[in-house]
Image 1 (cartoon, rainbow, N blue to C red):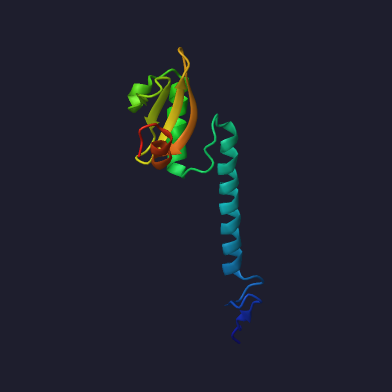
Image 2 (tube, rainbow, N blue to C red; image 1 turned 45 degrees about the horizontal axis):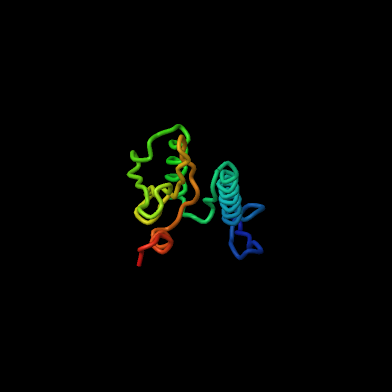
Length: 127
């Protein structure tokens, strides 16, 4: 005697008590939610707001900020002082993002990460 496949409420067919396709899909969703929750939790440790930025920019900005906290010279990251305000330092994070820092003499404090378009608008002389 052969067994017959059961029709589950989701529309899939199979032999078990539950639909394994849907169970696997739900497990994948749970794992994805957990990873997102862990990623969101990392933002509480940041000194500046990095939430709205792409992941690669966040990771690179965190690396630069940690290095600045260890008193690494900003020029190692190709940072430059702005011409109109020599206390503001612009450090390229990626091709499209800049980390703006303020020089307080003996230390440099990061203020924000802005896109290249925002950066060009905020500095005097930009188009």
